[in-house]
Image 1 (cartoon, rainbow, N blue to C red):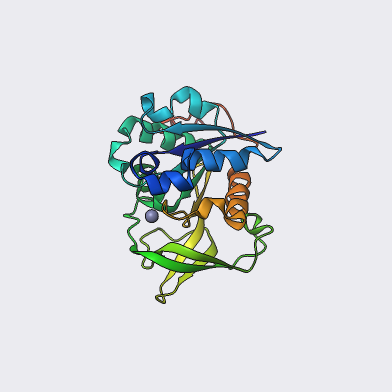
Image 2 (cartoon, rainbow, N blue to C red):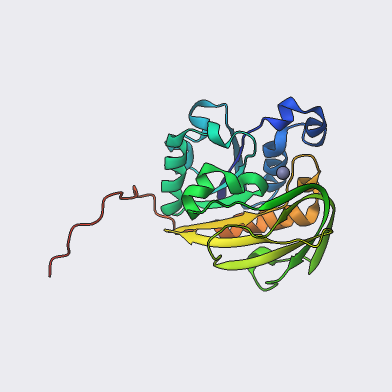
Length: 238
Ligand code: ZN
């Protein structure tokens, strides 16, 4: 079984009735619900307000893939939480960053750039799959229309991705690297752009398929449970 933890800051759903109407159990509840229907996935959720932001050492040791949604409270994620998540990704925990997770402290720590981008509310997106042979694209159509989605546009300040699987096109003519992968240490990272909280993006079956594929891809079956050394190794004896 792939042990998934879905993390959400869980603030929009509490403060904005229109978001709560789309996600009555929170964005994390919605994502956990569809992932949990897969036979090979077991899911827990964690949120910002929990002790240690819900991501204690014990939880992370029991997590194969961490899914992350955050937006308005990136700065309220404790630095110690960021350190733990970062260390676990280097040790082989998969990480799936969704939508505005691009500006999370965790993604900035993992990728090392500003991750700044251009944006505009209330646009329309055509999501192009440009790597149809990639496991994350399995069962995904060549193009998929999101009738309403926030525009995220280039330039997107990320390091050159290992793989670019999806490109987003928006009605203003902007384009965006909407689905990209990296490895950091032993950990696999998938960033996926769709998912603005005011629109029902995570109810879309194609989006669900892509996130599910992303979780399976990021899962490292051979992940060791050894503590990850922080210190540089001693010189080798001949
Ligand atoms: Zn957004």
